[in-house]
Length: 603
Image (cartoon, rainbow, N blue to C red; front, top):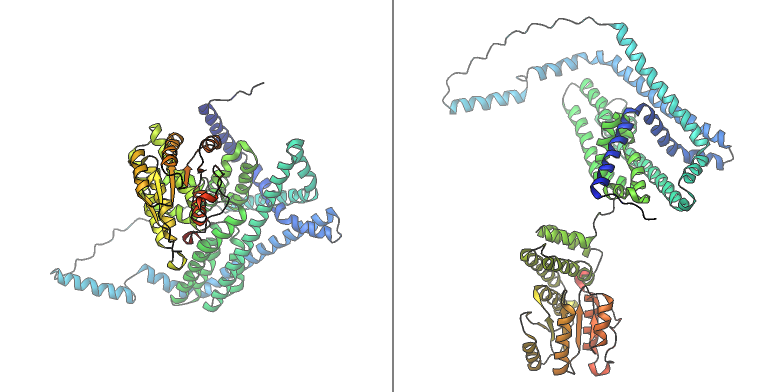
């Protein structure tokens, strides 16, 4: 029975409608999903603690209760300390009333202080240059009628505040109860999830659950490391500046950074306000602000993207977009849960074929292979970007591998597009010029000490047809010349008879033919026939680019020359023919397995 497949437009429409429906469900039932998501996150966080207690001999229920009790104590202690310090700060603010009033007066009347005096002096000089003899009278401010005072309703305020507190306590109680039962039955829950997918997918589901758990745990661990590396310098810096309770503020900043983007702002607010209130001058407040800005720059640009992306398997862009999306959907709690939830979505995209687009959009792996990237940059006429892709590829590969895996495939694809009518000559010329320039630059970087002077005759490269073959033969001849070999290249406009006559007049020791589709085999076979008849003692290496193995075998069956399909094998055969006389080789033998010498520019 054949499976019915929907048209692409209908399939995309169904996917879009499903996405909208899911987002709507998550939004309208957020009061249900937010505690559930928090419970799952805390379960991931406390599962290692419960597992360690079980290994020490505690029962499953006792271990789960101890882990949850530890979490409640930590959260309660942090909340109690934070509330106490906030109340203490509120009680101390009247002592700094004079300092705060002086600063507010300076801000309200900017004509007080050295900066205002300097500004007034410069303004006076400008007035004199413009010939102004008198200053304009300041405009009188129009008195504003005060707004009528709104009577304060203390009962409504208290009722609203108590409602919010009771709601938060109720949500917290639900979360910790769910975490307790999740920890007790975590193995049973895992078995049920695996059973839902069917016996045939046990392996895939197990790998997905392990992958998700490992990524979320790694993310939480890395975030703890980042927060400690942030909180400790903050505490030391505030201590040196003279801020009271510097250690407490450093601890608070480290804890609040578990809330992405919003947490650092909340953590920096109180120390900055305190520096504003305690010190009479502006030096300490400016130093405090500078300290937080410096730590944010270091953490956001150096530490967080590197650690978070590597620990979660998410790209930097995905982390930012996920924070925006979940904050819009669930508010501050969504911001806290953004990265763990997105990690789970990325894992689903990795192991569920229907959701593979999630892995492409969110994962760290490149959405395009380097060869496709290079080809696309050439199509877009992005010379700098194409060069960047090639340079990045060279960091982990040799120059020969660059030719085989990046440059030659891109040139063949562009020629195929030209033959199909989807590309024009501009694309072909741009690609060939870009490849020629890049290869010339790379071969020029080879150090003279790495060159080997060759006393043999020249190796002649013959392009079968078109500018593509000319570019490829220049590529190979350039690499050989950089190593000290003598090479010559012919024009693709030469006729077969002219090439044979030219070869007869030269003292060449070897010939290499470059043939690219779509007429590669026919032209290569014709050239081989003429060259073998006129120069039977000169070895010929024929490189057919992008040809199937069947076509290569058929060409090998009708010629005594070596037929290859890669730059690596072509250079290996040429060097072996230069090292050993052609009469010592068996006619019709397959290409040598001898690896070419490593080109210095490629490592």
